[in-house]
Length: 235
Image (cartoon, rainbow, N blue to C red; front, side):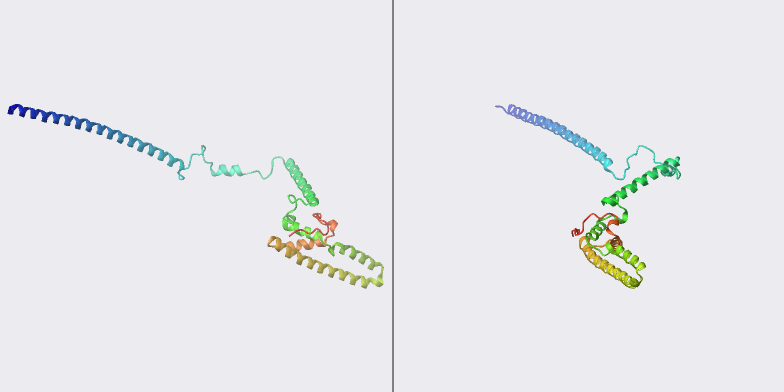
């Protein structure tokens, strides 16, 4: 092989190898650019969608933004006019009739509750578990006050007609009064201990409430006794 031919072949081979390598680099570069462009576009689209979702979510849960009410806020005069009611009703007779009917129904419910002991319609002074416990405790025991009025009335009438025994009748009345106060004190002492043991405290006015009930004759007590003698309430 001559030298010019060898040089020509070598150059051809070098040119061929450079051309092939150049085409591969050109195609590889264009493909990578397109992939990078697609990736950047996809990332930008995802960022936009996430920003839109976060902005909409922040608008929905933002506590500082007050949603519209759909109506204008009434002025102060309008609010006062809406709350204002006439002092005198248009139909006084009808209003009085309704008031009397409501009062009559309320009295009937209270009277029924006084007989049955229904807590819902009892007067305020008789409501509550402590008041019920006091009534049941007093009604279950024998009290001197149960017979005090009858004995004192009999002694008083006898003293009017039997003058020689008037002094003795008077002394008997004082003895009965003393027995009543001693019995009431013993009753309250025991009842107070049971109230503290059951409820932890004593409701205001319980002592006077128990004293007024123990003074009254059993058939005349209101509310009516709901227990028999000996049926003491449980602790």
